[in-house]
Length: 226
Length: 226
DNA sequence: CATGAAACAACCAATATTGAACCAATTATT
DNA sequence: AATAATTGGTTCAATATTGGTTGTTTCATG
Image 1 (cartoon, chains in turn blue, yellow, green, orange):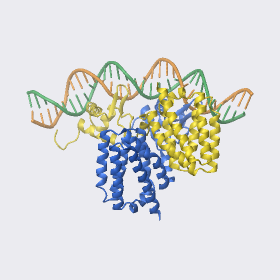
Image 2: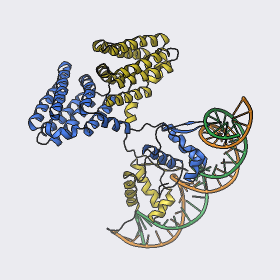
Image 3: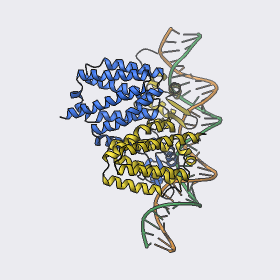
């Protein structure tokens, strides 16, 4: 038990949850029996059971009579592993699936407020062509804003994940070579065109732009490898 | 009170708020009882109670008679929140972006071993039309296998995520209504056609099938709402 | 002196914890 | 195959803990 804290079912639950989140207990692993946990935490078995009940409610563990209590929580470190195993080119393959659909839904579902925020992000982007790090951040914000235009929470979440990988990947290293001021301004021409297409609900045009955008990102990447 | 001196309910509130914000007390955790806090802060219980009242006003903690004072402040980690906020229809919108690209990459990159495993999954699927729960599990396995055919770790991860949401969403409830034996057999016709298209590297055909598949899933869902 | 914050104290009602015994399902042992 | 050991599920009553409440006292401040 952490110093300064007092026992009780809620706190035991929090500690076990932390232990699971931190990987002390892996997915599928069996927790110590309730009677052992009771001794470890210096409390009664009923209290431990109450704590486990809370974890079970959260879907962190599952209990089986006669067998034990098992971790059902699936750790997100899977994503980091996938990210490390994924090359920038493969990432573009993934984005080529996600982003056109994102644009499609954005054109369909964006409200006026969404479009206003998208414009703000665009203006910031256009003021950032002097520093490729600032540009990268503004670029992320713009695309995230675009994701929010879809009004689809899952799509927003998905794009966040892909975006984070984008930060981890090799891309991060070659970024400085690719993003010359001229290139950034080229990208921004596309960004503005994309914004206009979304604003005027021109689906065909928007899809065409994002397609070109991804193609260019791909060829830029291939060029940087040389 | 003289300026420059410490003490008083407001200051205790500030200290506790800091402790919570810094993670000394996590969400759901029970704070030490008022009597103990009074001792550690070297003040009376009344003063501590006043401090807790302030925190309660801020929505940082909740108090329950006979139980304790609990931290309600949440450090946003909303992977599951996105899932809960996403309707089955919105999920299909996401899948409509991911799955065609998945099929495209699968046709491009699948090796012979991948295709063999895909066939195994397909056969299992075709033996599962008598129970919609078994069918659902086999269906997941088949599509996951398809994801692995892409040889793109990020795509595999992505599909896993989408798949998990599929399990959480409302879909889970209406599944029983949609998946009649006849419907499962229809789906399997498509599954087999998809398998054949991947095996023979017929990209056009594969994309057409997955498009129809998603369209049908969408209309089935819309039908089930009535 | 009047005021208000704080300390101290006693009690209430709600809740939690404990300890025990026993059940039911699973797993290990013989 | 039969048996024993292990493990989660359940119930109950006694006890401890905890926030809520009320009242009095102390003391620095204006």
